[in-house]
Image (cartoon, rainbow, N blue to C red):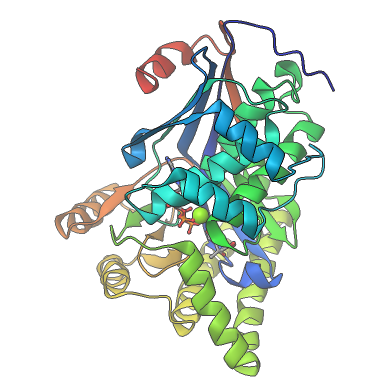
Length: 396
Ligand SMILES: Nc1ncnc2c1ncn2[C@@H]1O[C@H](COP(=O)(O)OP(=O)(O)OP(=O)(O)O)[C@@H](O)[C@H]1O
Ligand SMILES: C[C@@](O)(CCO)CC(=O)[O-]
Ligand SMILES: [Mg+2]
């Protein structure tokens, strides 16, 4: 691979979508099947060459702006003996984590600590040589709400860095090999965010579409996109790492009780995969089963103690209008998913959204099943001309 980064006006912009888990959150951490889809809400990363001897990180969603001297980063990379094989990403060690956490202080929040730690580790690993750059990450996803903001942060960040440092060529950006490299590095970022992630979120963010996911294996669910869902944010912050650890504690304490719950969730995922990959299943049957399984999966997740009073409030409001709703993502707050069958009356959909918003919740009626990671700009070239205006607004 070539590493001659000699372009003075070097800029790369990429984006990666968030995700919605339809079935299988938490169970997927134990190797069970999950069903998830990419979202229209995205995270954009821009890497730009500068000449001021600092690495400048700007994260407007976290109101965070920080600079790191390149000499300091060079010293860390050499003293920590960080020899990296780009095709074989390795997770952060405790020693490097402590060093980078110390370097990034003071920071105002846990969210900022996680974001800066992920960035610094990925930058130190991917950059073959520490050079001055400015990195800006802008996301339309709510942070920490169950829609995969951490995965889209990692996927967009590593895809822009890998392209900036010439490990991925602009014209081969969506090749199988490039996508695998992006997904593997993003998984390392997700490990910093979640501790022990399943890899579902970064895979859906990288590859896009609606997917069934079992132990890292993906199956595209082609006809899923015509199904409509509304997402509602409780606006109660949660942290996925903590939620996953709480379920792990239950699992360790009561394996014979928790395992059958995870198996039931797995069977819901498997059935859903069958519904969306078999031909000749009538839409009416799919609709009925989806409604039932959304309820069953929700209550199985509640039995793992990941609900919250606001979650139950949203479930009740939507139920009053005849809709079926479940937790999506890690729970404890965050977002819920409501299935809107095709025959739904648009007036009723409008009313339920209004009532949810009047109760202080936020609704997203976004597209699902779109593209995964994308490149938008390479130096002075906008890859899709239509993107240019939008990108100028995002990166003012
Ligand atoms: N736009 C962003 N800018 C900087 N950091 C971000 C951004 N989006 C996400 N993050 C990082 O990801 C963390 C949120 O990750 P977390 O896994 O807890 O929530 P989530 O990914 O939104 O939900 P889930 O994993 O349940 O889908 C934040 O604390 C922050 O460190
Ligand atoms: C809760 C979880 O299943 C989904 C988080 O979006 C965790 C994971 O898959 O790593
Ligand atoms: Mg996450």
